[in-house]
Image (cartoon, rainbow, N blue to C red; front, top):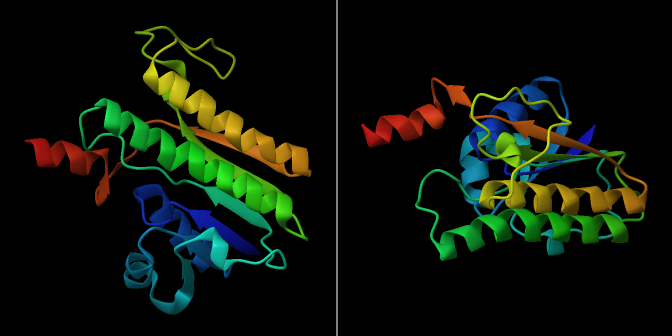
Length: 181
């Protein structure tokens, strides 16, 4: 399959790309740092720094949207909150605009989100049907997911993926905890 991935240099993206490469998929990564993509994956992955480098004739079977500025590395000032929103929502809107123009639409858009959708509800058991709370992280996730769901208007199936904090020996939130101690 031909797969376009945003956020491919993040912790989840790197692991996903390595798994997809092991299955012989053809990967293109949209990144603000194409040189980082090249360092991580050599010539096994194509790297783009802008959707404008693609044409309406380009074809991807699946688009996986994991992009977003790191959420735990800085205080949530007004400027940082705007950066978090823009890096998720604006990019997702750009992807949807690109999908609308494509001659051959992808079959699937997988869009990352987080359990931040639910907000802090203490020890209450939560399911996908649980109500969310009105706070910044919830609104960020709601708006991000809604932007992704707009792909359905182009006949593209959308899967929303809500992850929790990701732990790993070589990164994820553990790296952030180690840098604080």
